[in-house]
Image: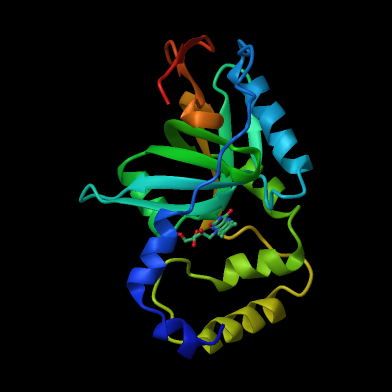
Length: 230
Ligand SMILES: Cc1cc2nc3c(=O)[nH]c(=O)nc-3n(C[C@H](O)[C@H](O)[C@H](O)COP(=O)(O)O)c2cc1C
């Protein structure tokens, strides 16, 4: 549809269409709940990754809060899941970005995996810390050269006067680091140590199945499991 046709459509007609957008979900619920939320999460991530309808199964929505209390959300990619005493969800970004500034002020954050084709959602809350430089370097150097140059070229979340400026910075960095690219000081990993992990499975007649795992205390990997009204 052309831009002209689109803007000529009355907005009331578009709203009516929106209110009718719904689909009914399947029969299956969560089934028997795993005692270990990470084993549960891994099985769902694998199912999402293997489902051709899910693009970027490891994409998740990270929500943070700024110093005025305003929440902000954006997608990032899950790049690691560390298990053990303090299991954590890892992602990588620019340490000068808006999200990094918000996390420095308020390290509590949430992650949301929207696996709509599977009628599933996982929401995680917890506290975010930076991963070690060694770990960031190992991941940074595993990335394609183009992505490594991109990390040097982008002053993420700051004002860009024109796309040409970014292109020019990219070219400059690609000439500076034609082969080996050092890890920038302004780039690295974050790890969200989970306090709660909630699994949601859509079901017919809005009989969705929802279970929350809450960490009993910070020094243990014990979880209290409750089912919640959907
Ligand atoms: C599917 C998808 C994956 C993304 N993955 C990342 C990522 O792993 N790290 C990142 O810094 N930005 C990623 N982005 C871009 C972010 O959503 C966001 O625009 C950027 O990090 C700046 O966010 P901020 O200004 O709130 O800090 C991704 C965007 C999309 C749509």
